[in-house]
Length: 366
Ligand code: SAH
Image (cartoon, rainbow, N blue to C red; front, side, top):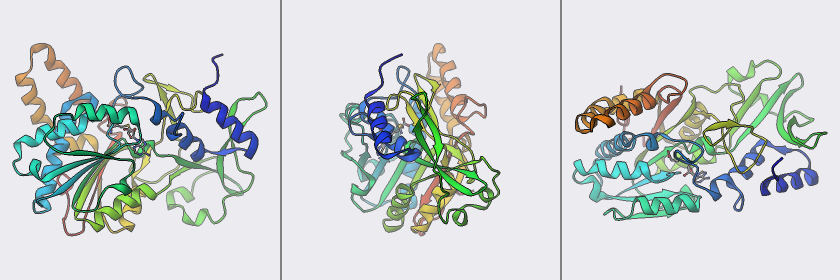
């Protein structure tokens, strides 16, 4: 047995004092506790980290998103000043690759300032190193609410899956909030609130209402999606959100833990493994549209990247690559766009949000 993590001690203390803990509170503590949270204490990315993301797989990903941003700016009638905002920028790789790709688009690069929204001090330092020497001004914010208003293009890749979810379990008596208790052996275990959530059933999407007993429904706090929608509606602009998840609201337990590139147990080593859950794109779109933005998609990631020209980009890279690197480009292309279980092309999806005056953003217009 290894020693309990500092966060495990804190969670035990809270459960002992106040009773079983809602899944959302557990997930919020695990991810963003200021002292012991997963995202406040480490760099989770890359081969030696816990997981790898699309921009870390290939430069093509960030480059194509850079072209998406430039084409979006044109649709906005090329304003002289525009904010390029990224929420949860990881190591800054996507932004670095995007900015490099903009060298082919005169005017846009001169028009932008970059704003990065990040809570992780270690990643923020990585981002500073990654973007050092860029001619484009870069500044950091702790939340999207703090980013100044004005025309803006907002990007979020694998950000929403890291926001806490709530879970409820269906019984004959209704939907009960799912919680975490300490069981008879002294381990963390799932349980549920004794009484059903009041007035819950009426608010559920139709597919969820029909769920059988035992089904689990997940939902996120909608503040982040609403902030995004409100910013797009208030300022002329657009957002691109890419993440793994489902196109339609439905039941299913998708809460998962990953550490060292392998699945881990959700309830062990809190704060030391990554916890994520599928993004419910239907719910995200609904929340953002309620604030006045127009939503598009979801499109599968593979389809988005094909529409943005990934095959041509891969061919160009291969033509310039050493023979030993050609296979790497093909592997990355397959990983980003393929339909297999270990590939991202279908599992990951993209939605766009735009100001009503803009029309459909690039790649979402057919
Ligand atoms: N977009 C990057 C990183 C994805 S990991 C990539 O694709 O590689 C999730 C990112 O969101 C990390 O940068 C993490 O530190 C950040 N993050 C997590 N919770 C956050 C929050 N509440 N506010 C701002 N950033 C957050």
